Length: 238
Image 1 (cartoon, rainbow, N blue to C red):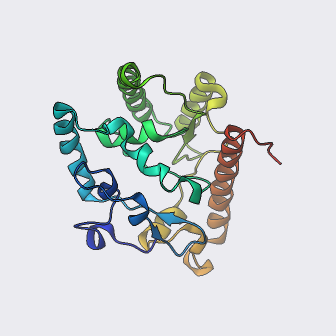
Image 2: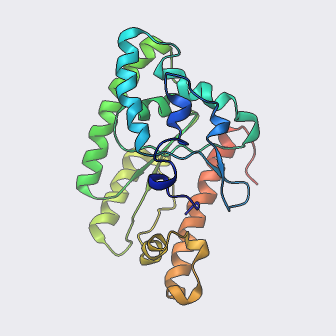
């Protein structure tokens, strides 16, 4: 969707790994690529990033500085003045890569599919994450995120069990759950098949009613999340 194929174009270099690696890291600005979306740049990931897991285990044993807890934060310092917002997309696993990202972040948005198995899985992940973060805090000091929000994703309003589970989540997490869910839609699947966003779909590619419905959902999520960010910045929402 950003005009790149990481598995082909960045098979040997050009990913975030280049800025995080322990031997001869490059400035993050050398990794950042322009996209064809106005004012939206990309720092690609790729299979090479898996090397960071192995290298970090070695670095911890040999006390190589800076430690993994600071590496992405330090890399981001170089480009911070160039951007209003940096979004880091992490896999739902507690490896060194994800922990490095969590410690460099100022806020968290956690997606959850409103089904029993997905919620149970998320609960276990968060429990493990909490224990890991508490351990890291002993070494790095308190971690203070500006916000922690949950986004209900792949939501089907006509699915009664999903609606019940979404209500259950809201009753427990209250205003930590965004009001607008991200709908499950064939329009999103169709766009993904052609490496497009839903904003690029031609009217002939999908039923108009379906497209309007998912656009309302995506725009609603984006607007609400923008308000969350504005509040974290101490700005009034207008």
